[in-house]
Structures are given as structure tokens and as C-alpha cells.
Length: 590
Image 1 (tube, one colour):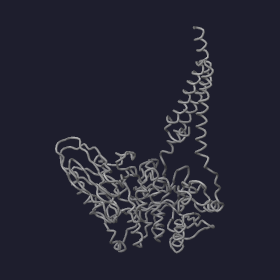
Image 2 (tube, one colour):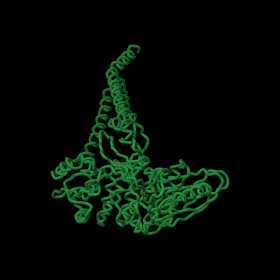
Image 3 (cartoon, one colour):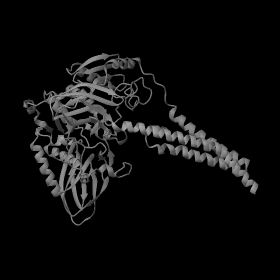
Image 4 (cartoon, rainbow, N blue to C red):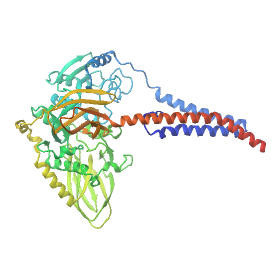
């Protein structure tokens, strides 16, 4: 029944009362037909036994649950934040995990799964939601290494004003981590201890000026969070003036074609093909993109397994990726639901059907080159290609090759793990002429940008960045799921980036002058907008467009459920009378 009120898929919920109604009527009718008293007793006993077994099973599953009282110091933190937090977010570290007793506080007598992050009513980010769990280990490692400047800037983009450490854990590892992170934060110029109790320490992020981040200068990062952190730590630039975009996430058109914007990469070759993938998405040419995760469910033996950044709990990408490498790039999959496929067992295969016309093609494969890698074999059109995936980069690289199709027939691409720990994100199969045309376009794009290699970041300090101060965010309001931003814009034709502290969903939109014109793109794991503003714009509204639709569907679902309840109740009341009448009529005729 709860399904009806939580999702528009009300037919799933409605099916249960319908089934039980039909079952009840059939049982009643069967009892009316049965004349043997002993048989009635046997059927009744079986029904009672079935009900008893069901109840016992429910009790068994829930008997190990116990009521847990949250310690008073957590309530003190909640009350303090109530007066200071406003629209800012707070992040708890370490997370309250699922592994008991070590990954949960000593006072929690059950699996954590995000408590107290979700139980205190504090504006936070849920660690088992999409894809905070992906960012979580990266922040943990930065704090352990003392890279507090990177932590402060990254959290400021997410609207995080307060970083909360708590050391009430049994695991020695977590206690030691909290001690190390606490020492690094106390000596950092980017954080200050704002409030504390016996086990909980609240640090204020001094680089988070406002809960909504705005900037007019874009910067593209190629190489994941690792390159961003290296950039922040290696330069003295004020990154609050920049809007960060990642080349392996979906990019707005204006960002791809913007002139004089900065691109930081650790591989110019991989940069080119990341932009190529974005161009295919932008131009509506996704027929050239093969997403391997679409072709495997993860339950078939001998096949590659799908993994997703936005579903780390069920798809185990965190286990496959972040748990097995100390130094990884923390890259993305362009679209969260594209994900990756991974394999650790030799001879695991995945077949992908192709429908290619006669001609010459380029094949590009984004694979994971890592210290536990080995070899992957790609079989396409009777051609065998071997990709060596071993290396200390621990990042995604692009492999490029060409092949020829003779005749127009259905082809098949087979991916086979020869040996090693391997993963693949996407595969591009592009006609050679189209590839050459897109490559020329990418070359023109790069000629208008400033490209800096991650190995030579010091040269960024010599640049004189043209930071526009033509937009001033004067006021931020939040009511009933709607962000209302009041601006003053000093001139026309100003590019503006806006990041709101809400977990990413494409349903978030910006409305200007009553026109909802722009959908969000992912920024880390929150919502980002890039738009052009002018002096006539004084107010911008940002809201989740599906929220209103859910309300309507909720009312519709409620109406349907109540109607069905009334109908079912009426049928149940009159059914015995009707069945008795039918039975008496049958007896009379006999």
C-alpha cells in the first residue's frame, strides 16, 4: 500500500488489494460449496497455519531491531546549527555506515545507513544517495593528507558551510582518521572550530560565502577530482571566482564553444576524446555511442558486471573502484546512468550487437588503466584487438583503432577479459569521415581555449584572469522547494554559472520572467546552470519541476485508492448475500 503513496506507479500497489480481494471471494465461495465438515476444518487449519508462518517470519525479521536513543550531544549540535546553518549544508565525517559495530557510533545498536545524517533534520547530504558516496572517500583522503584548501573549495561549491567530525567509533582506523583530520583542520587557515562537544567537532568552512555558488568564469577539468585537487593545491588562485566543469560529465553547449576559457588536463589525447563524446551527445549523435552497461544485468555468470556512480550501494562501483586503489582519479561516466562495466575474472565476455553499413570506421574505447590491470580483447568484424590495461595511472584512458566493414550486415562486438582487474565506460564506433570532421571541429575549439597540462600548473599563476564582477547576488530565498535569487546585473550579455546545493536531477530548471528555459547539468553531484543574463533580469527562480507533478499524481493516486477501497468494501459486504442467494437458487433447482 505504501507504494501507492510514494510513487505514481499506483498499479503496482493496487494489484495487491485486488489479488487479496479475489482470493478472499474465492475462499468464501469454496467454503459455501464444501459440505464436508472435516474438510472445512482442514482448510481452515491450513489458512491459519499460513497466516501464522507469515506473522512469525515478519517477527523474526524485525525482532533484532531495538529502539536507539540519540545522545544529548547530537541534540546540542542540532540546536546550535538551527541558529547558524540557514540554507547552508553540513557534512558529517566519517559517515554512519552499514557495517556494525565498527562503522557505526558506539551508541547505535543497529545498522547505521546514514543516521544521524538523516535523523536530526539537518540540511546535509545523504551518503547512500547519488552519488555522494563517490565523493565521500575522496574528501576523506584529502583531509587525511592535510589538503584542506581543496576540501574547503570543493565543499564551498556544494554549499557546505559546516564540516562535522565525530569520534564515537569502535574501529581504530576511524578513530585515528578523525584524530588526523582534526589536527589538520585545527592548523588550517580555511577552517575554524565553531562548536564542539565531547565527541563532536563542528568546523566552519571559511571559503563558503553563500549557500548558492555563482561565478562568471568557467574552467574545464579533464582528469577527474584528482586533477582539480592538484590544481587547487598547486596555485594561489581564488577559485570562488570560477565555475568548474568536468569534461567527463555532460557539458553545456556554451562551455564547449566558449573562447579563452581555461582547460586543465593531464592528457591532451584523452581530453580530445572526452570532448568528442560530449559533442556526440550535444549534436544528438548518440547512435555512435555504445554504452556497455546497457547490455548486461550483472546477474549472468561469465559476463562483465555493470557499475554506476549514482547507485553505489546496489552496483558496487565504490567496492570495485574506490576500495581497491589508494591513488585514483575519481572520474565520471558522462551520464550517471551510463556507468561502467567491470571484470576481475579471466574469460568473462560481453557481446554487443552492431548494425553497421559498409565502410571504414574508427573505434574508441574508454578503459580503466590501473595497477591491477591486465589485458582486454576486443573482437569486432572478425578483427581481434588487445588493449593492455596495466599501468600506475589508475585513471580512464582512450584506446583508438580502425576497422573496415564489407557489406551491410549485422555485426557483433565482443569484449573479453583476458586477465586482470578491468573496466570500460563507453565505446565510440564512428564512420571515418565523420570522425575526421569532428576532429577538425575539436581542433578549432581547442585553438580558442587556454589548455594547461597538470604537470605544469605553475604557469597558471602568471595568467591575468579576467574575472567579471558584473553580477551581484543580493538575496537568496528558499521556500517550498523553490530557490528565489535576486540579482543586479551591470551590463548585458553576461555569462553566469549557478550551482544550487541539491543532489543532481535533470528535473531542476531555471525560470526567468515566467519562462522555464534551462535544465540543469551535473556539477560534482549537484545541479549546475550556465546561462546568459542581462540588466533586465532581477529575479531567477529554480525549482524541481517534477515536484508539482508528484503532488498532482499523489492526489490522483489518493482519489483512485479511496474509490477502489469503497468499491472493494461494497463488494465484500454484498458478496456473501449474492453468493448465498446463488447457493439457495441452486439447491431449489436441484
